[in-house]
Length: 318
Image 1 (cartoon, rainbow, N blue to C red):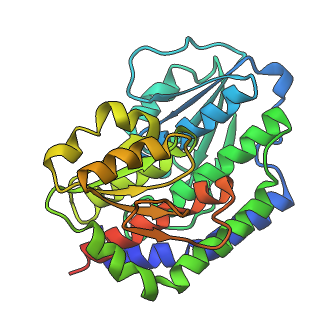
Image 2: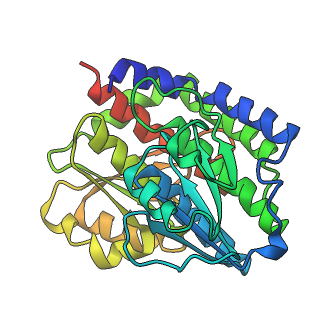
């Protein structure tokens, strides 16, 4: 793992998104799937892969599809079945837990492997291999692959439901949003770093529909600069994390969009805690960071983690 190369990986995001948009316009990577033959969808992964799978499964359920995102390490899960689509996500293609989970389904369920390395073990025996097209992450941290996984799972949703955003167009808007944050970081990055630099870690909060943003952001603080960080869903925050504002110098990143933003901010104001709001104007926040197209929740899903990724990268740099 290398902080300089990780920063370079982040700076390459807009170009990588544009490349993925071109690829999706050229052909549907899930075109071999026949929706009428699929009774349920099981998404498997670990870490960032599972974060992305969680929001994808929620969208599929909203469309009426029986879908679940599970820890690949779970010993209990759906039984193998010819009408079960297993989507195994592993950027490296070598996650031990995901390989073990896929082994229970290979030859008995339809297995689609989503990976940056089509020549890796996860692709062996898969019925369909979907390349992430994120490019090598030389910093050793899953950042572009996380973003591309979200995009590809949106494409899967469109294939199975016929609904959802125009993914190539969304990717181009997200590339513009990402470039905007990168281009203007001289304005916002140092103040954000100072605001979040407390003695008790960083807490990240997001609505259920974009919970992956909070989870990935917290992981970036842990994985790079090795700082304490934890993620919470906005509504659940009032039941599980509010207590920390009573005793800690509580510093949080809020990704707005939940109907329960106000509930959380009421407690935060009462306790004098510190919040950086990313992508919206939130009353009571210490600072609000806006970026291009941030009024589109799908753009936010693909873009907003960059704020914490950049903060983490600069905290990590020697």
